Length: 122
Image 1 (cartoon, helix red, strand yellow):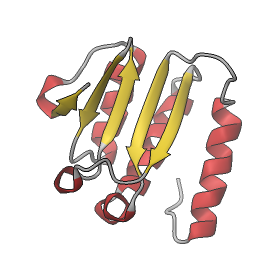
Image 2: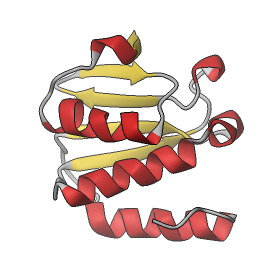
Image 3: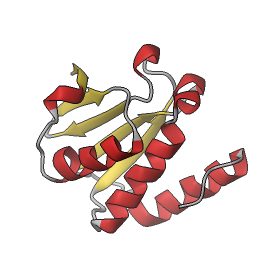
Image 4: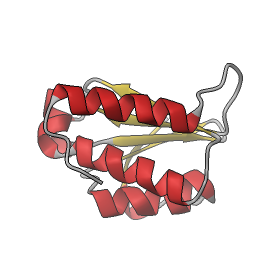
């Protein structure tokens, strides 16, 4: 995957993600929230988003919706990724791209929360 170097690159990535995930009108199995505010982007959330998209595509998992958000109020924990599965939202902090891949494999696809990385639950 190429690095994102401009806003236009980010827009292209968003369009690719929409095409891949085919956001549904109805329910999806999992929602992934990623903090894409200024602090999140500065902390590396673009690379985290790329890793999530790549891992979902590799595993051919499309029953998911990715929601880009501004700051979630957890700036010291950025990049922050939230996973809403089975009615429980779990937030992971200081997420690096390799962690994001493991979150997709363990939590998003298999429903197993990675407790060591959890910073908050709803």
